[in-house]
Length: 441
Picture (spheres, rainbow, N blue to C red):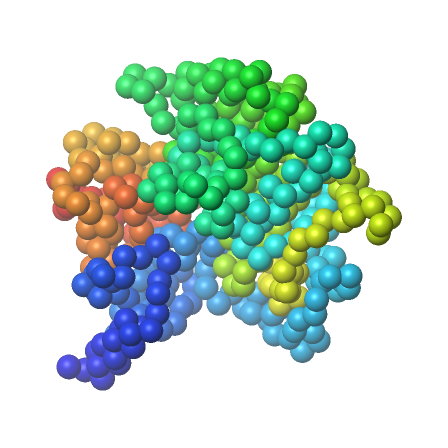
């Protein structure tokens, strides 16, 4: 046994004795031969045995330019020399101001205010509360939220309430917010097109709003791609139709762009594919290029105005957390957005997506592949089940050849960093394609 191997075994044993991992069945964790990550650079990370892996899922959909980008490293170090952290409750600082200006400069029309949060779920929680309180302060209370089946918006209770993946959410039904659900626009019936499915779900949504719209505070959607649902893509007409129905019934539209935003779909925001601006937009993940946790809610001026008043009016939004607008995270985000502008990262993401699509086209003829779904770099390959964990086995096979990807059930997900080079894209797709054919034939 080499010294590296002894170190890995020791770390795994210590982890198993003290750590509880997210979205992980701990009884199976050690048997799945976990990787102990030691370092990372560019598009790769290395384990403690010295094995290199191509990061095919952007470290869970957050990395933009690759690991250890010097410009972002320097921005964090420079900020650390001035200010590590201070509360944002009543105080402000330049990184928080500059980042808000940059987010709004590229935001869909009409979004004019930034409320900072810590991660995707906390941004969704804030958006849900903003919508509810704005209605309460402008008129009658609206106690319901509408959402879409197979949606995912985070793991805190409000975010779980507007999610729609039964595996993740059914345990908590009795303590959720009051919601109404319509079908997923990305789940097609045999022979059905995405346009037909979008129209069908919009009819369902219209009927819901006609019956109970006066009680609905907001509709929550993931525009264009329901990511955690299995990369379920839908027609842009669903987003446009949802916007129109919300307008007709005075319901706020919340676009959850935590996964889809910051270039992942080949546009800065997925809403742009539909030419739609929401009332509230949540973002996170790629905002800091995967360096530090920071998320935000972008809101319209009308929503912001609903919270203005005297201190005695109690119209304040009493919501926030200790690390709101952390200056180090804000500095990383500013450097990330500057790099994206300088290097044309959103256009590069669109080109990567097109390349992935072309390279995966031959899989359409494979009996073991049920469907390939993709918008921009966000790609899901649904494979036929040949066992209890087919998607996992495909990812393990790719791992044996130096590529790291993760499944959503039997959907193998590709979501590379947005600066990945063509030859690395070719290795990613080629390795996963071969892994699929090895496991499912």
